Length: 520
Image (cartoon, rainbow, N blue to C red; front, side, top):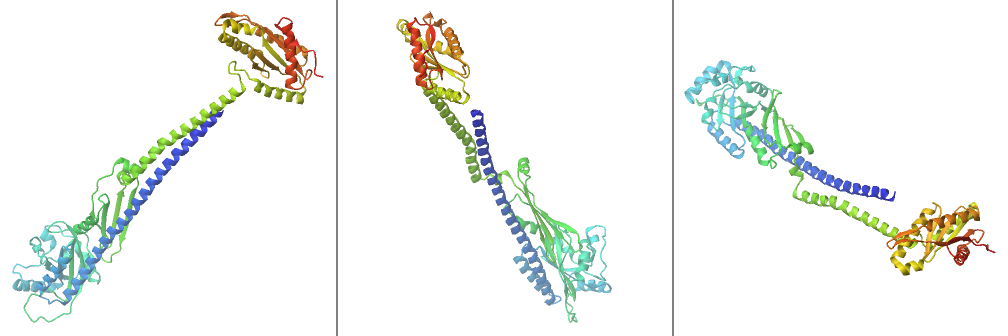
C-alpha cells in the first residue's frame, strides 16, 4: 500500500514537472509568435504607408501638371517638355506625362490640316482599334474628339500615339467621360501599354480661358484639355520590393477604377511554406484599404509563419535548457523517491533489529513486553486470561561444546521455526536470551488449556533437528504461569513460570509444569 501510494505520488510529481516544462515551452513559442505578429503588423503599416505616399504623390504631380497646362502658351511644347522632365527626374516612378485637347467634331478636318502645316506633315487623327489592329470596343459619346498631342518622354515606340483619339481607347473612354464631369482626378483600369508592360492612367480635366489666336503656331493646348499621368504598375511593385525586407510576405494590390471595376496592380512571389509550417504555425493575414480620392486601392498581405521564424538561436538555447530540465527533473525526482524508499527500508530494518532477535528472527524481550502489555489490556477489558510459557532447551551447552556454536545456532533457528508454527496469530514467541525462549498464549480459559497448549509445544520442539553435524535430539523444559491466577504483571508471571520450569529440570527435564503458587 505504501509503495503504491508513493509510486502514485512520484508519477504525479513527474507529470507535474513535465507539464510545467512543456507549458513553459509553449509560452515561449506563443510569445515568439506574438512578437512575429507585432512585427508583421508594423511591416504592413510600413508598406501601406509607402504605397499611400506614392498614390498621394501621383495626385500632387497630376495637379501640378494640370496647373501648368492652364498657364502655358497654347503652342509652347518646349516649356511643357522642360516641366515634364523636371517632374520625371524628381519622381522616377512616373512613366509618362501626356496631354490631350478637345476638338469639336465639325473642326476635326481643319485641325488635322493645321497641325500638318505647322507641326507634323504626317499628323492624322487615329482610332485606337485601327492602330492596334483590335476590334472596336464600346465607348462613351462625348460630342468632341480628344487626340493626344503631348507626350514626355517622347519614346520611339510610342510616337504613333500622337493623334490617337482617347475616346476610342476602350479602357479610357468611360474614365474620360467621368473626368469631363468632375474636377477630381480619375483612374483608368489597368491595361497593357502599346510598347509593352501594364499601366494605368490618372487623368484630370483642365479648363483654360479661350484666347483669340494671333499667330499660325500649332494650337496644342486649347480651352478644354485633359492631363494624363501614365503610371506603370511595376513602379508600385518596385516601391514595395524596396521596402520589403521580409521576402516571405506575399503582397497583392487591387485598384478600383472610375468604372467601379477592380484591376490587379501587382502580386509578389514567395516560396511556398513547408507542410509542417502550415500544420503547426498560423498564417498571418492583413488587409489595408487605401481610401485615395482618385486611386482607391486594396493591399492584401499574407505571411505563413515558419519554424525558422520562431526557432531562433536564442529560442533554441532556451528550448535546449527546457529539454534538459525535461530529462533531468524526472531523474531527480526518481532518485529522490528512491532515496526515500531506501531510508524507509533502513528505518524498517532498524526498527526490526531493535525488536527482533538477529539469529532466530523471533521478537526480542522488548517487543515481547509490548505484546504482554497488549494482552494484559485485552484481559482488563474482556476478562479473558492468558498464559506465559518459559521454555529452556535441555543440554544445549553440550551441543555447543561438542559440535560448535554454528551447529548450536542451527538448532536455535530450527527451534524458533517450530515455535512459530506452534503459535496462533494472536500468540507471541520470543527469544529471551541464550537458549531460553518465552511464549505468550492468548485467550485461555483455564490452567488445563494452558497445560495442553504447553504439551503441544513440547511435542513439537522435542523432534530431532537436522544439522550440518547430523540429526540431533532436542528436548526442553517448559514452565507455565497464568494471568491473573499467578500474577498481573510481566515480572511476576515470568518468575512464576521460571520457577515451574526449574521444577521440571529438577525432575529430569523434558516436561511441562504449571506453577502451584499463585500470586498472593
